[in-house]
Amino acid sequence: MKKLIITFILSSHSKGILLYLIILLGNLIPSFPGFLRLIMFILLIIFNDWIVFSIISPSLKRGKWIKLCSFAYGTFIMILFITGPLFSMHNYLFNIITNEPNMPKSSLIGFFIFGFIISIIASTIWTRKKIKN
Image 1 (cartoon, one colour):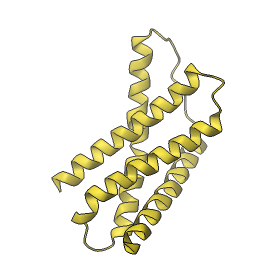
Image 2 (tube, rainbow, N blue to C red):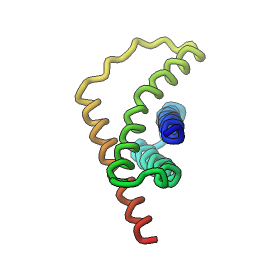
Image 3 (cartoon, rainbow, N blue to C red):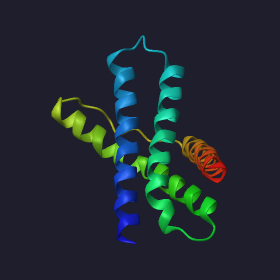
């Protein structure tokens, strides 16, 4: 159980830092294509999930696909709680004065659906790959 909790925390932090760096890359290099940043973000998240799946899968007995998908989705949701403080710290360190934006609820729903789809894709591909081996 301790291994799952530590892995969850580390995976959540790595995904949050990835999103922070992808957004920061767009701010530093405005000519960098947004679609390419999105594809890079998705691939890095799936790669992160696959590494985490290989760590936690031996401890899961039944319902492995559902548990892996739930784990990936939970870490994806935690991105919101990690990236926000990172940008607050970034703004504080660089004396950037901004008003706190209000995120519309429709954006959150889209973010949750996007995370759910990415989690399903990552866990399905990883599980099928492991079943073949």
